Length: 117
Image: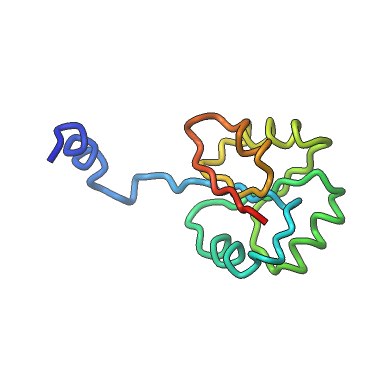
């Protein structure tokens, strides 16, 4: 085994001390086509799930209700650029989005799942 991999494995021997990563979901996407996938991902994600949107808070809440999504927090931004900034500042580890401009503006240390619709 590679020495670096072996060292990380030894340091993370106790899985209970590894913090669970948070997941960001772009709620502006036409998620109806991938609703089952996104719903399963959100419900089974081990860390926090944060919804991001440029819609009004009420419209965002209706989207979550219609899709039966689990979210721990909601962040409403004024523009796609502000949404990308909010995603970066939130500290989420992984992001699900249909918007390439949001996905492409994330810090390099964030995992991205680009939903092509």
